[in-house]
Image 1 (cartoon, helix red, strand yellow):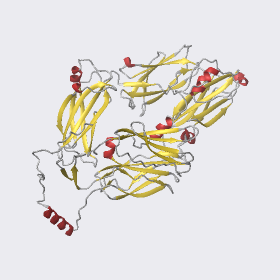
Image 2 (tube, one colour; image 1 turned 135 degrees about the vertical axis):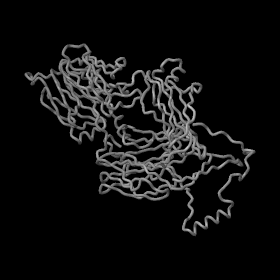
Image 3 (cartoon, helix red, strand yellow; image 1 turned 180 degrees about the horizontal axis):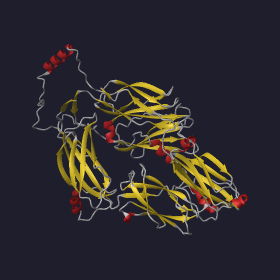
Image 4 (spheres, rainbow, N blue to C red; image 1 turned 90 degrees about the vertical axis):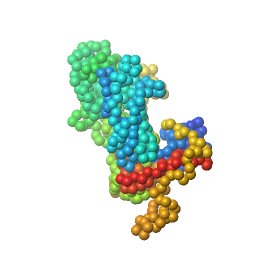
Amino acid sequence: MDESMKPIKDKQLKIDLISPTGQTVGRATFDPGKSNNGFYRGKFQLPPLTDSGTWTIKAKLGGKLETYAIAPIEVREFVLPTFGVEISTRRDYILPNETNMDVTVSAKYFYGKAVEGIAGLDINVRKEGGVSDPERVVTMGRHSLKDGNAFFVVNITKIVQGLGGQFPADAVLELSSRVYESATGKEESRVDDSLMFVECPFKFDFSRSKTTYRKGIAHYMQINMLYANGKPAHREVFHLTIDGGTPQEHRSNYDGHYVARIPAANQNFMSRIIQVYAPGFEKCTTGLVLQPYTGDSQIVVDKVDMEGTSFIWANTTINMNQAAQYTGILMLITARGRIVETRYFPPSIDQTFQLEQDVLDKVSPVGRVFAFYVHNAQLVADSSIFHVDAKCREKMELHLEHRNVWPSTTSKLTVTGPSGMWVGFNVIDKAMLQLNNKNVLMENKIFNEMEAHDLGCGAGGRTNSEEIFKNAGLTILTNANVNDERIHKETIECVAMNRKRRDVNGDKDLKEGSGESVLSGQDHYQLDVGMLKNMGITQRVRKNFETSFFFEEHVVSARSFSTVIKYRESITEWSIQAIGISENTGACIAVPKKVQAFRHFFIQVDLPNKVTRKEKFNVKSLNSCL
């Protein structure tokens, strides 16, 4: 895609397969014009003796400026899990006054049925980013699963006492659970390290806020409120103080975000101090020091939202009695290296204009507004970064004919979206995603990538106009007075357990054919099969257990596209993913849809991931009835 999220078809593309040792073992080259829709597919075969570890897919786009993207692939021996394990605590942090904590371990087969068995829970405390110490593991024992859930009560006080009685601030509580299925003894595990011991439950982030202010002019600052584990603090109350004044109470939105208006200073401060804290946690106050802009003339520009509508607002100190000494005000909206909107206004104190939807679509998810004028040959400028709701320019949706199907059956799939959009599909077994879901297509994946392409640096606003130009990602050509050293921009960035080996000769106590069967012999088996056939019931052997399929692209016409897909024969849940791209509306990722594939009666065979020649082993079979 280009910076407008539209397909690139006129440049050469190379896709490389790279081993963990950095060796390129495969390459697919696509010359300009090879793709008619922006999708490129390369097929690679791993070498016979494959190195285990993290392999890399690298896609490299040719042109004057080389652009590339990488995706890691984990290569190792594995057995697909038959069920998934989840650990939940319903909390985001642990405070010093906490005594107990409830933990729930849940286990479900991928087709939705609860697992019957037992679950164990181990607890450890480690430094964030550190490695667990096995000698400090606390075992909670094993509890039976009821409707797929096991409940534990963790004694926080006892854990702290085991650490010497000192509260382990900023440490991570690591919860690990292993669930054993009662029918076959098969086990699956899960680790959760999202909980932290904290003295302050919230963190505040000012990275989207300017670090300067203009004398005599109010401005807006953006505050992000987060839980201690980094998750957005939804609808939480916090206090804001300005220059040591009376605290003001505010509440974050559902994204943990808040835009605060900072009024003009009533006196001449050398710097201004902004402080925020959660009620009851004044000791955890987070502060931001605002430095003054050094010029005599001033301008402030911000994006503001009023009653659901976005506006660009600019305020200046222009003396209207001497308006002839000022140039007009030029405002630019930029995104990812492009100027998407320009506005010019005569000299004035206040100017506001509405951001139209087409501008917001071009900017999404992040843009910058830049405004400047010239007074007495001096450049006066300001800039501000702003975010808009990340969404597709035209919505694309997946529609399923059935959310529950039998294995190996077909079902209709429909995509609705803008006509002319090409849509690429992928269907993945949830069991595979349980092993690794890092490369799953999610709705915000494209927007996160686009945000990383912002050419500016910081939130905008600096102590002089040259730095404002530089950090807005703009090049200036002017006859106004500027400092050459300040305007120069350097090309730098802003700143599982192994399976035990078995005896080749087998277990001496294990006799070949010792497993009992409901059938007395092959003849009896054939007789039963014949009787079932006479009743109109034919036996079916499930063979195709592909973990992903349907790598195809199709074009949407008349605002919809329908096709029929045939599910593989696994008893599982399928995740259907779709990404669309068009010349007119750019790219869009649909919300993945889930389909459960099951039979009311089926046989599940539990096999080892590998065996040795002449080795004898047990085969466990589970008959399931839903």
